[in-house]
Image (cartoon, rainbow, N blue to C red; front, side, top):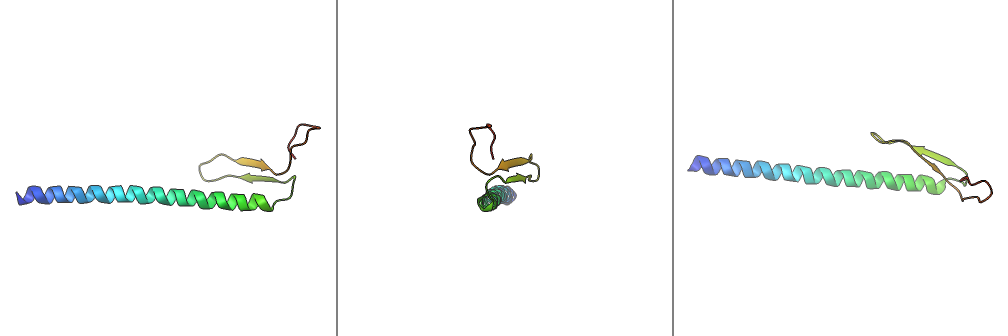
Length: 78
């Protein structure tokens, strides 16, 4: 009986540790994404109109952002 109880307790502890690890990893990913987004917003806010900002993260495609207002005359962003 002691062996079964020890095995069940060990399994429960291993399961709880795995669950804690997954939860902490998820929280870290959310925090890193929040920091990256805040940095991106700060950089865009300081650019003058007509500027272009390209950003590529690890494992993501390149994002090109044009800063400025929409012009009606030629239909391009600038």
